[in-house]
Length: 92
Image 1 (cartoon, rainbow, N blue to C red):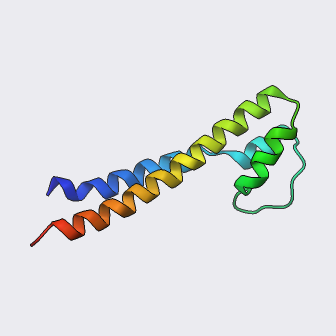
Image 2 (image 1 turned 45 degrees about the vertical axis):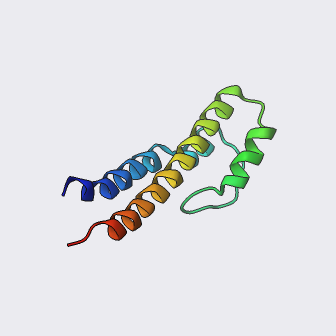
């Protein structure tokens, strides 16, 4: 029964990393020009802006934001795969 909690745990960790990704706030704080994205800035756009920015603090915060976003996706995939694996091996 304890193994059934693992997908929920991975999903909660994924959501925590998503909350740590504050890309839109970083763009507004450092007045980085952007298109009007309502939910999130695309990862390709963030990487392009990191390579063109001169402000080291903004670069550091944006690279950290990219890391959090990648961890979010990784833990989402792990949660999905753990649901599949547990569903396959658990026989009730």
